[in-house]
Length: 465
Image (spheres, rainbow, N blue to C red):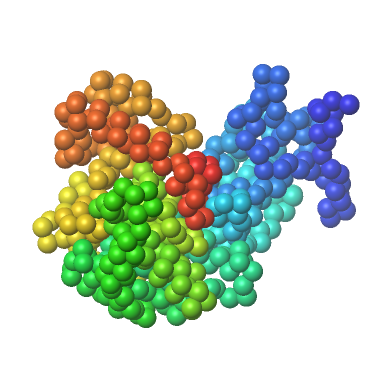
């Protein structure tokens, strides 16, 4: 028996009337992305040809930004293929949190009833929340409704909050677990702390600052300020004595008789490992808590993180946000979630990602005068293009550069390219080679990262989802 024959609607009794309903599963809606004998396997069209008076799509579709618009577009495509055969289409999606064996996947619901013109006529009102919608089969000719969408950053913020609120389900707890955040005085850890407080309440969050001799008084004070604003228990645990003790212990052993001593890079990584493995993991054990990984997507992509150090953690709430998005979400959190300067403006750059002398530039603070090597804004957009569903390549970037359309295609300003000196061809090529090499050479770190809350179609986890 052919597949076309097997795909049939069900006859269901509804109010003393037999109704012919076609049922689909999730990706049947995305049929134009797949081919069978060179043609899309359009389950909806087959069901309609076999007499379905209504199509119901039962879905478990993870949320990513723009998902509602993608759903609406797919249903319109089905309508165009069906023509006059088109009938009402009910899209029913789940909410909550699941895992794919590595990352944390959030589901927004987004359940929608579409009329036979393929336009929404009944919508759920609140993303990520369970709702019960009623649709009378006799009243499916309702006019179309306009769908309103929050900003990209607002939607991603809501998705992270929902992910954090469902961690208890993932670990089998009856109530939300406690979290410990390493507050460095930088924007990433400040954002993670603020999101945790918003999602779970300050009673579920502990904060600790772990300075070495390279940490400035300004970043230490900023960490204290963020904790105070969020009303968090806060401790400062200097690590310099631990660093020196470990250095002496390691340099006293000469396994290969080479007289080798710890390099500056070794000492940088030692500081990160003492914070992550020696302190945060054991504090988490002491207080029966989880501790967070505060990395963003750009750091994770480039491997700008230390295994068994700041790459540790139970989950990574912002690891699917570029640094550009981290800055934007920090502003969103201040303005819309707290209506207060929770995350200090000292940490937030201008539109070209420039910092005034009195501000705090992003830095690991693991050696003197250290600043992060990324070209914020530009590298963020390169990464998005490299990891998009329709991935771009080095050849694309070089062609855009030669054609003078790089800024246009990355949706950034020419001024940002000039800000980073990329109007100079030699610097552009050297930077692109460095960027791609760092991504390629950091796979071994990314696959060992904690679970990431997915916000895009191409989050890291099993390297790129």
